[in-house]
Image (cartoon, rainbow, N blue to C red):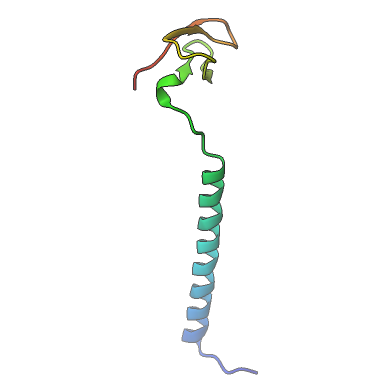
Length: 77
């Protein structure tokens, strides 16, 4: 057997956890980059009645919600 002290075992376990967390962080960063929306927030509409967010086909300030047909105004934030 390979002689190992408690300190060395703890250091190896700590190193393994750091590598594991690094792999998880990198996977999450790649997933977020892959699924990120490329929207301009000035074109995003949010319905106050059904809480549906959508982007209309043409750039307008006033449109109807595709889900509930309520009038929606573009938010300026």
